[in-house]
Amino acid sequence: MSIENSFRTYILADPTISALISTRLYTRELPQRPTLPAMTYERDYTLDNYHTTGSSGLVSIGFILRCWDDTTLDSRLLANALRLRISGYQGVMATDYVYSVFRENDSDHYDSDLKKPYVETEYMLWYREIVSGEFEFYTEDSDLLLSETGEQFFATH
Image (spheres, rainbow, N blue to C red):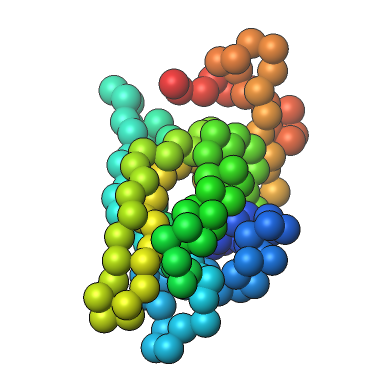
């Protein structure tokens, strides 16, 4: 599963968000004549991290999410539910281990074609893709990771 799919699945698993938008979380654009409220999301950037011996395996991805509704207040309420769900999250999203999610920006907008307001939020997500069947967790020593099989390796921060 891609990080985008993991991210989308994690967002929709929230009872508050799913009660508001059901499954109306679309990639990039709303459909024609959309049912609101709804959300759109897209990947804004990807930054791979490296050290002197190659890739560290740690990836930073920027996501732009837009929360749409009939009023700015209702769009803002949806954006707040999203913030409560993902900002500061650390843990497993489907098949990916997420080190952290940070909200970077938040602003109100108006789409003149749809004649609808939306809140645009930008999030930065740091993750390490988990190889099939592997699950990682931190030990007391925050630099040491163990896989499900007990294999030890050092995390790069």
